[in-house]
Amino acid sequence: MLTKEEKLAREIADALDNLEALTVYTTYCYKYKEEFLRRILQRVLSIPEEQIRKTRGALFTYLIKQHGGQSGSWD
Image 1 (cartoon, rainbow, N blue to C red):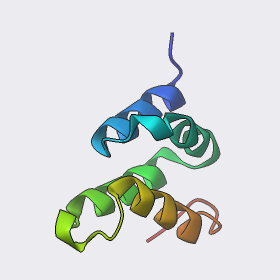
Image 2 (image 1 turned 90 degrees about the vertical axis):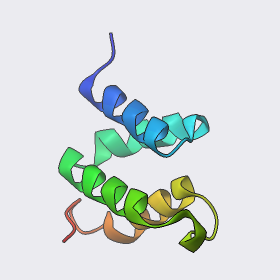
Image 3 (image 1 turned 45 degrees about the horizontal axis):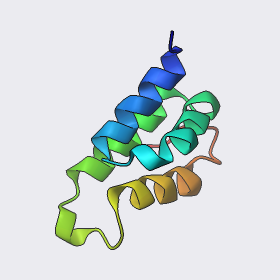
């Protein structure tokens, strides 16, 4: 049986088409608040593919690292 965090990590990995990074996303789900992760995910998914330099997964990780030090909250 999966935990709430593991389910969220799977949802993020599926949305970003990056199952290879599932372990990383699971770590984020235990470390940060769900609403913070969902806001970052929503932002990443709203950016057109041609405006993303690497991958959506890389952008998601970058934004988490940029804003994650702010107590897991980001506006």
